Image (cartoon, rainbow, N blue to C red; front, side, top):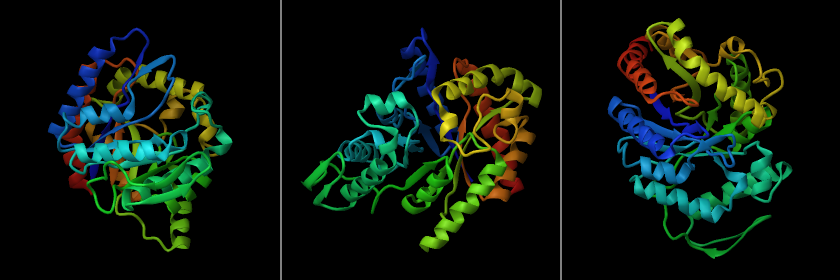
Length: 338
């Protein structure tokens, strides 16, 4: 079982972002020391009303704080970008980390981001596919000629290639059923999002398996799932500490339109918190959280967890307390129970 620490790095306006970056760097050092296998960070632009550090430069810097952890851009909003730029930036990260990059790729869903990058939601699927093809070719071929809808590569050779051969792994983020099929077709594994209930994931996992079978592709060795998590002495204590911060984050998700990217029947993030909590978040004592993780492993085959423990405005000491409890009490219980 592998565990990665998701650094959301989003803060309310008015927070001192230099001080907050220092907190995040300390959390990355702690994750490395506690035995987490990866550090993951998301990508958004124009994150108003929140403040947020940008993904790729952040991970390049954080890699120095966590020398034993994989760096996981989870996810790169690939349809917004030019493939030559992303290929070189991520290859640079792979070199700087000695081959510890995991490339998380996905569509995105926010109109402000598509407009800001001069594209549209209707173009995002084709752009993502051609961008991914171009990035992978640039990483694995010495001379690439390819004409896309918004770029042209003419006998291009990258300035720097990734350390990993033939290339870094691709985790494909997907919410909708059609995107899950795309993840099977284009990715090395499906990066399962944090928002869906267990029953939705079970249904979509069947879609994923059937698509892999149709493509004659093997089921991946690593199946990653992102979940929001908070460990405390009891479930009531975990709720009391974490609820205000996580509730504010999911209100922001709803206002950003995350619901629109989710499958029908499980597409309402405006639900009351107690309803959102059901089958989505891992909250409770070490025993309760370990039992939930074991359940995901046995029921879904998930063997890699990307864990969000830090949300809007949560004090640094509360994050580190939960990290210690998870690593020192939950990890061993899961290892014994699997």
